[in-house]
Each structure stands twice: as C-alpha cells, then as structure tokens.
Image 1: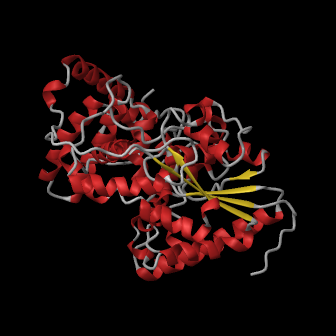
Image 2: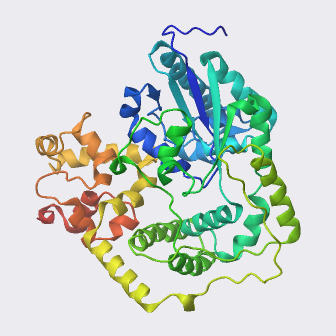
Image 3: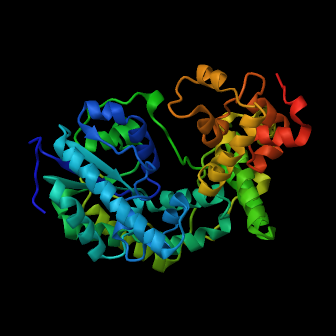
Length: 457
C-alpha cells in the first residue's frame, strides 16, 4: 500500500504494550476520558470499543482469535465463523481510523493494549508492523516494567480481588508470569532498538510520581496537562488486611457447586472490596522466597531489560534466600479494622451506592440477549404507563437517543428513575435481591407488589 499523507504533518503511532500491572488500565481509561482535550494537542485516542485496545486490536494478529477470551466476552460471540467475521470487521474499523487520521491535522495516534506483550511469535509482531506501517511516518513502542517481586504481589492481589486466588498461589505465579525478555526482544528485533522505549514503573521514578504524566512526557507531549480530577486510577492493589480476609474467603469458593454460585460469590466480593477501599491499611508487602532456579531465570530476564532502560536506573538482581515463605494470617488483622469494615459495609448497603449498583449490573448490561428481552419488556412498561418520557427527557438532558430505549439499556443501570414517583436507588437499597439477580427494579416491583404499590417517594 502506498502511503498518502494528505494533511502533510508527520504522523506518529505510539504502540503502548503494557506490561501488565504497570498502570496501563489507568492510562487507557484516562486518555479515553480526556480524548477531546488530547485532540486539542493533536493527539488521537480512539473512543470506540473498550479503552483497552487488547480487545479490538490484539486479536487481529492471532492465529486462533477464537481462543481469546475477551473477544467472546465483549462481543458476545462464540463460534469460529462469527469470530472470524468480527476480526475482519475490526480490521476494517482500524484501517478506517488510520485513514481518517491521515486526512486530519493530528500528529500522534495512540494504541494501548497490555496483551500485545503476549503476541505468540515474531511473525505476529511482524504482521502487526505491516498492518500499521502504511499509515505512519514514525512508530514508537512504549513498554513499562516493574520490580519482579512487586509485580508478583500485584498479580497475586489482582487474583485475590477477582476471587480466583489466595496466598498459596504465589509460588505458582512466580513460575509462570515473569517471562519478560521474550516479549521485549520480539519488539526490539522487529521495530528496532531505537524505536522501543523501555520505562521503569516505580512511583518515585515517574514524572510527577504519576503514570499519566510520565506517559505523556515519554511520547513527547509534556505540555498536555490533565487535571487530577480527570485522572482515573484503576486496579489499585489490595492492602494487607483486605488481602488476608479475601484470600481466606476465596478458599471457600471451591465449595461452590455451580457457575451461578461462583458468579454470585464474585459479585459479593466486588461489594466487599468497594467498602475495603475506603479504609486506610498497610500495604501488601510480604517476603517472597523463590527457588534458586527461579531467581536465576528472573535475573537473566531483568539483565536484558536493564540493557535497554535509559532512565539512569537499573533493576537490582534478586538474591536467593533460604528462609521459608510465611504468608500473613488472620490473627494479624486488628479488631478495629474489622469493626470499621463492618460499618463501611452497612453504609454502602443501606445507601445503595450507584457505583456498586453499576458494577453488579455490568455483566447483564453487556449481554445482547438480555438487551433484546429488555426491549420486549419495554412494551410492558409503556402499556402500564410506568415510564414517563417527558419526565425522563426533562430530568436527564444528556440523553440523545430514545428515552425509553436509553432507560431499558443504560439508564436503569446508572440508577436513573423511569418516572417522578419511582426512586430506583431507594428501591434497590430496600430490595437487595434486585442487585444480586441483576433485575430491572421496576419489573421486580410490579411483579412483587403490583402496580398500585410502586410509589416509593
């Protein structure tokens, strides 16, 4: 393909490939939220699809995209044929985005997806380069690494948060999650060492001790200032006490007999973590003891990483210790923490905080089948005059689509009210089973109490 730059500005692609647990989600979410501000500085971050481009970009270069979990989950497709069609649609989407960028006065196009570090072979990275090369004059790969022990603890914390790990899994993680030389070497071999920027993810070393400011500085836009209120910090690691409690709780998940019970268990964990995050507690920091062969392997990887860091910092080699690994136990969790946690849970449940409501409804909201069912149920709402369109338009002026459609597909999950007499959040707080069952509160109400008893205010 011949490169045509109608706008004549130099066009740069920034390929941010993570790695995992280096603030990538915070970068992605903040950039997408502030995409209009970025455009003012000729920076482009796509608004469509999830802000994590692992979902829509990474699978384009997989031999078997049908095995990639997030394609199935986000697009709700499962057959090999449907996934193949979706991949072709995504290729068209990205090429159209690149073409529009070429015609604009934009200078820098950003793609961010931490799963890009996992592209399985050099051929896949070469295919990626061939896909983007016709549209850009310059391509830079940005990758962050963090201290290996800190990384392991962060991965463990994430597993505990999602209800799929406990402290006993740390040894297993250390054997499977520290192969960093391979991914980095692939990108250096294909894109060239001068085009791969390696950074250390350590708050003390980041520009302004902030991953967003550091990323913007690294790609050459330090003058872009995103206010603190518009920055979003995601996937923060658990504190020590919350990690202990959740780790013990996760051991009980093995007693769940079916998928529905496991999902409910995980939803309950979300609510619990929301409350935990409102309490000050010590950081999760334990002495990690690894086998000598593991230490040697990790040090080899980080020796290679050190060769390409230009921050004036080098990762220190790990030292072998003969001390036995001891995990923190319940007896170190103070009673005051337990009492404060109990108070926070009570506050959160009784106030039915909207962020918890949205979190628990998220899976249902993204399910196309349920959306179709909800549209059918909208006929029920109209028939019984439970939805006041004039009220909805007046109350929520940001709505651009059909008010009823918005309420059914989106508004209810944001805690919005269908009429002046029905308070969604109030009803949910008094009927918590609507949350756990992810049911539309007004449907639940009419079925439970009849139309004559829906007035709650």
